[in-house]
Length: 148
Image (tube, rainbow, N blue to C red; front, side, top):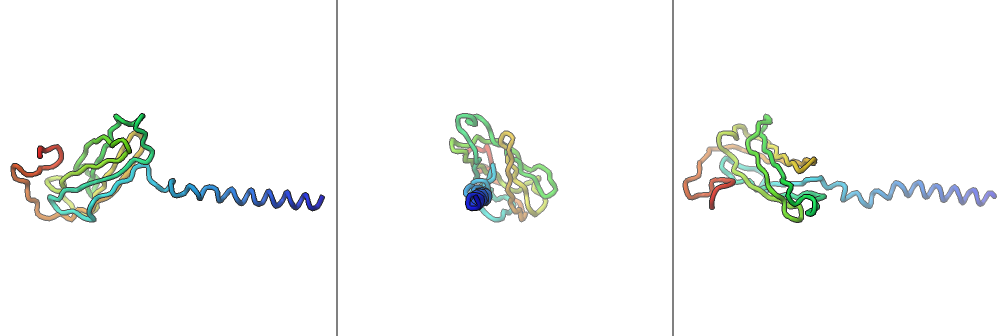
């Protein structure tokens, strides 16, 4: 009887202790944000083209094929400087670009790049260092939506 009680206690203890370890095998996949994105360079000056690449973690092309990702860039005080929408590819990856500078990019500092896809949100930052703005000449790449 004493041996059976000890055996039951040992099995129960191992069972309880092993429960805490079962979640660690999946910890890596849970650390990936729902929307992740990054910029190509660590900082940008006035007139630089900012390239943003990212992915949507739980993207299902059968469900989300016509759902646009909305991006919104805000300055250091929260004012919107750029906004747009794009369709992710069939893997949930996306990329877009915009030109930093102009009349809306007034302050140097961290600019937030907010990403919205359905009910999920992601964000990254870009460091805008300012500088003298040089407008593009006709025939040059004038930003998103311009003809090449």
